[in-house]
Image 1 (cartoon, rainbow, N blue to C red):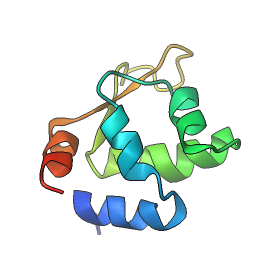
Image 2: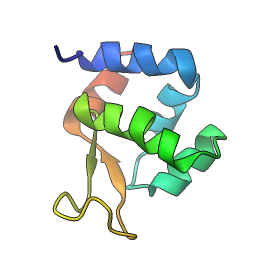
Image 3: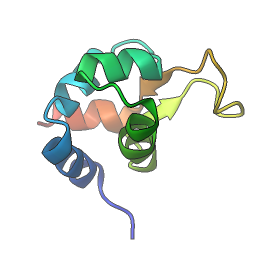
Image 4: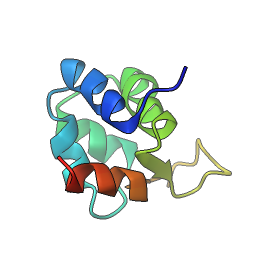
Length: 89
């Protein structure tokens, strides 16, 4: 069962209250570290598996280098669906 983009944000907001602020800040691609620091979290593995992967699965965020997911220069950007969700909130 896949969640709608709005359900993804609602689900993540319960654990990371700043998720909408993070999405609004993503006007240009951000690294996972930049995203994690913005949210004030320290655990990189938790952030990747719980937040970034959920945002990607929900279609709100995409990788700049999808063929190299573990690249040290990997960044994430807001998709059109993510932008539309922010515009409609």
